[in-house]
Image (tube, rainbow, N blue to C red):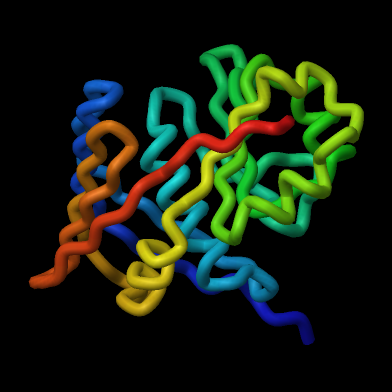
Length: 180
């Protein structure tokens, strides 16, 4: 019998001064059995960093390679942004860049390997591809505090992250990396 998804219930007070987004989010996030803690946490953080009207986690999750982990759609259902997590291959990014006017990837590992793998590969509108490296120590600290039900505050200022979970405060940065 296949393992089912684990559901995480998160209450997030989001303050993103970079984009003037101030929201209280109540998320139910399904974690696929093959999904690592780092991937899950990065997916949650990417959702917060990209939060806007029309944002949603994909319905298929990791089991559907034709969908992004996070998508932003307009009211007609047209795909506006494809938000990927981790280290997608060039073929996936090529397809994503053809399907969506904006493609962003949030990387939770050392970005050097992804950049090396993508270097010289053909990616449609590759110059417009947005790659963001998450602070690995920040992701690890969040993972250490991850619970199935939790509440936290996340503030974002100049791509610096400040998270308050209980009596702990975590800080880290999201930095943009580019293909050569």
